[in-house]
Amino acid sequence: MKKKRSWSFFSVLGLLIIILTAASCIAPFLYMVIMSFTQSTSLMLRWEDIHFGDFSNYRYVLTQSSFARALLNSIIVVVCACFFNCLIASMAAYGFEKKNFPGKELIFRLYLITMMIPSQVTMIPIFIIMNKMGLLNTYFSLIVLLINAFGVFLIRQFMAGVPDELLDAAQVDGCPEYRIFLQIVLPLIRPVLVSLVVFTFVSAWNDFLWPLVSTSKMEMYTLTIALSLLKTQYVANYGYIMTGATITFLFPFVLYVFLQKQFVEGIALSGIKG
Image (cartoon, rainbow, N blue to C red; front, top):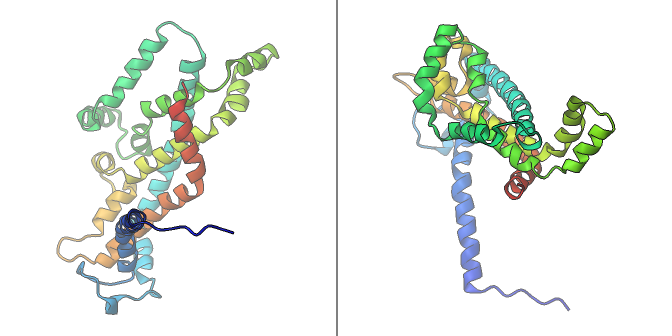
């Protein structure tokens, strides 16, 4: 006979705390989605202003404003940043972890020091360099700063768990270096690559300061800048603003839902390897 579970006071209290915490986290997103179906110029939510079947706000944001172009720009920047960050970081991590060359550890430590420098410190010098090279208002200027030392550090920690014997056996069989990297190393580090994709995606998708500084043409604006432009100087239609915020939120949310398992696995294994 199955034993009935008894609920103690602390069990009920803990459950209530968890429910209240979850509700407090979900409430702002529900408010955002509900407000996207209104035409309100006030942040006060009134039920008579809500029209769930009316998608006019979404049509306006995607057709009548520069939001659609900014959405395309953000997608291009995010896809390129994820691809090149994973490619360059995995190649660098492979060299640092599996190859021996003079000064390897020193170079790696110097490389990691760049993670300790706030981006605001280097923003003005980078802006001057980009301006001198004529790279402002280009996708390159928006993508290149998203490739950093964090990806190399993350992948190297995971790559320490790849057996050296496996790579040595491939070399003995005459497998060229590029095939060892593409056909053996990359499939084995897939979980941490997924984690890096999520990190890079969120950083690129939510970046506001550098796109604001490096772009002056409306056709090069990213999603975060276009979202800030939905608020006009005199009148703010919060229905439009919340619609833009909802669209901006959906892409990383969907990505994380589909890649959640691999993301958690990559983070967990990166912490225990090496």
